[in-house]
Figure 1 (cartoon, rainbow, N blue to C red):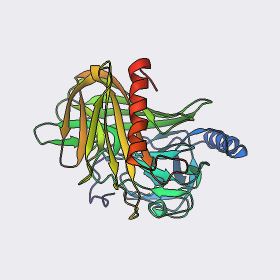
Figure 2 (figure 1 turned 135 degrees about the vertical axis):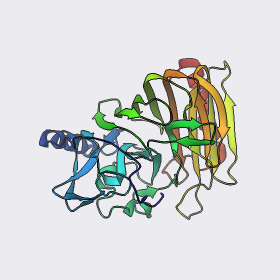
Figure 3 (figure 1 turned 180 degrees about the horizontal axis):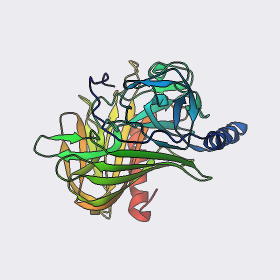
Length: 336
């Protein structure tokens, strides 16, 4: 990930964090329930912030991490503030984990898992960036850099040929919810300004107790051109595109040695999108970009698949067989 910038690009005015013992107790109950039956399918959404310390500029000094269900991002917070554990919201099931940065980057990263049990509650507890290194549970496997990672969202700037993220936002709130058949994070960005007028954006990222995919639902206060998603463009890793039989859905995907583990491993990434919302594909310097038509609402899916997962997709052939089957399902059912 990029080093912390000298100034805070993520300008937010907020009242601070909503942290109560009720929220912490509720989240701990979910964790205990999953751990009582570790082999059972599960989904899990997590948000963990420090309390008991204090802000020193844009760094949070001291304190201990506590799980919460709702948060208003403090004005001081930016990348590498050490305030939010692993810097964002976490989504996990038996096969994979994801995190979305709750700062100006707004990228989605991948936690590759070598176990099928719950890991997120322990990630980042033993050192702020310990998850970048190999551990018995797995590790952070995707180098997002200055991109939106896999399946996150931004706005494509056609004039400058890059994807604008969330450098200017008046207010951001986030909530995580764990239900029986799904877990999700909802994020409410007030006054997101790229160029021209600011808009409000609501996103919902949902993971299920099966497979590796996440569903993303985006809702805007006003129609907006250039809303986009995509995946990191890694040098020498070819992109594959496919359209469903009935031309309802399509995907972009890439598979190869595109991890930051420095191992002989492989990672597959894909974004599935409805063709009725699709405007164009653009390859920027760093991102394979799916640009949506000017609209208020769009839904799509993304996934990652690490070759070192237990019972995972260890080869390119297995990965593309999997994404092609999902494309068929979307073509028939309009959902996974």
